Length: 200
Image 1 (cartoon, rainbow, N blue to C red):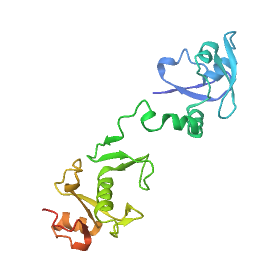
Image 2 (cartoon, helix red, strand yellow):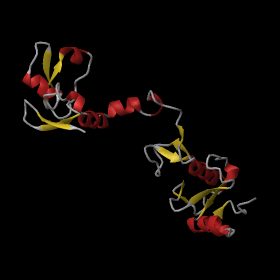
Image 3 (tube, one colour):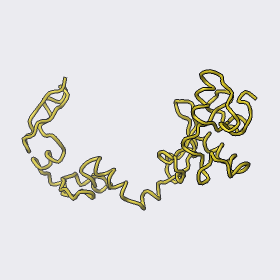
Image 4 (cartoon, helix red, strand yellow):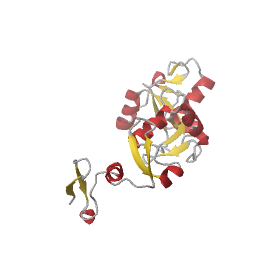
C-alpha cells in the first residue's frame, strides 16, 4: 500500500511504495537538486515550457534532461515538423513495412492521405475494393470522390478477415450485409458490388 510523505523542499504530498519510506524525501528530482544543489549539477530550461530544472552535468552532456516532463517532451515532438518528417513512414526505426495485422483479425495498410485513415492506417480490404472499383467501375455510386463511401461495408466471402484477395471481397450496403449474415438473404444487385451471389 503506498505511503504518503511530504516533500522537504516544496511541502507537497507525494506517494511512494513502502520500500522507499526511509530513502525518499522529495517529490521529484527537481526538488531533490533544489534542496541539495551539487557542484556537478547544472540548471537548464525545458525546451517546451521554459521551466527551470537542475540536472546532473553527465545527463546533460549525453543530450538528456531537455524537458521537465514526458508531456512536454511529446508536445515538443508533435510540434517539430522536421522531426515528424524524419521519423515518418519507412524512416522510422520501428517501421514494419506499412502492413499490420491486428488482434481482431483484420489487416491494416498504411495510407496517410486516405480520408478514412486512423493513425495513417486503413483497413486493407477497403483499399482493395476501392482499387477494384476504380479499375472496373469508376462511376459506381459506392465511390465518392474516388474513395469507397464510409456508408458502405466490405464483406469477406470466406469469412476469413485476413483474406483480402479481390476475388474474396464484396462491397455491400450495411443493411444488406447485416441481413445476409443474420438471415441469409441474398443481396439485390444494387446492394452490392460485384453483382454476384455472395457464395459464388
